[in-house]
Length: 530
Image (cartoon, rainbow, N blue to C red; front, side, top):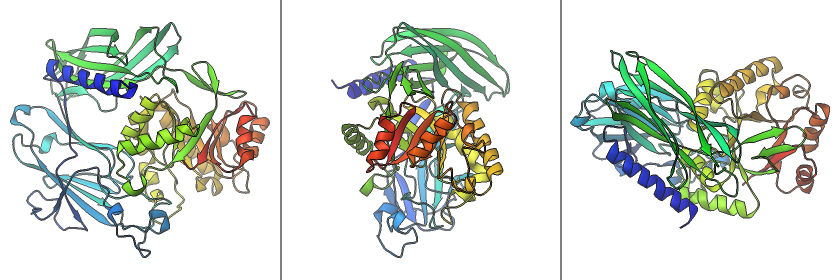
């Protein structure tokens, strides 16, 4: 049996056991099926009583833009494939069983392109401009258990051009409905790290946060178990008592030891699972499983990138989020095929150009053994297109950065973060740009102090930039630059304490490859494009 298949089987067994033994635990339901869709801006479509009988029935992920028609007059232009943009509406009827009365109900979207608004039974829940960021809303106060409920989603990318590549349109990533106890693990709060790794033993730190939505305090206990890639229990710590104040929260933070760990690496990407549970009265009332990998890595100024004590070169490729004729709603098999083809060419790392990828993409890079540079934005406050992210940066950038880090920080494949690609602010106002960069780096470090932060610097030596002399480049944990490898090598020579990496490189230039091969200080490169 192949390793990936075995991993899936093990997880399925663990889930099945969990559903049997922990009947009172959280219930996570795939929410992709049986949506209703209408193209165009439909008045009143957010209301519960709206008549949607004539709407098209479909499953998400769904990218309505890729359906066409192709037309040179479409305002998306060539970068958007000359495909249509506009407004699309989605509605879904469902109910939460009456037996779940007293539970908390949440809906999670992995991504909606773009400027999404969400309603439940006609009540507006919120807006999210950036289509690449996952988000959730609590539905509890609007749910009548056992009765019909309507979720409505409006996705608006009518303002064009909005990107330098194809974005897609609509609910193009997965959706889930989650029902938890009133006392439950806060979303994205569980963080698994491996601060001390050796062949003989590893320290695994588990940090998490439980919230209590009861008015009165609640006495609970925590239980944590670690399983290896074959489902074998390798460490546990149970019955840790905790009193959570009414309408309050409590943090969990402790270490477990794993003997002779299987290290995650590019050739044998061993995965573990941390199962964190909350018990009350001896019964599990909430539980979640966090896949993670055990590995150590570092960037060294003089010798580049090291994984588990071995010096390797990061031979990367930049990838956008679309899948050719599949548009933005990309089946996982397409990504697996593409990564296998890239591996045949020698690729061992991916840069997510220029936005956060889907969660299942990172699950795949974990299982297949690829490193990932997880990137946030293609622009800050200065536009590259009239309707791009610069319109939302000041209000949303730190929120979107935080949410990307919280979502992605347990993936062993993610080895660094990027604050952006070829940011034009840096050439316009150096001092303001440094303030902005410091604010973003602080968000990364606050929520994940284990990974370095870089940026794909754009012509840092030209007039108006001067990033290698004004202090901006040295704010980065690892200095990244697009193209012009000799400039990057000169920047290291100027300051040998700098850790450096080529964040975007020409695949057709022998001189650029030799800059990587022949200079140990160069950690890696990411060719444009994979």
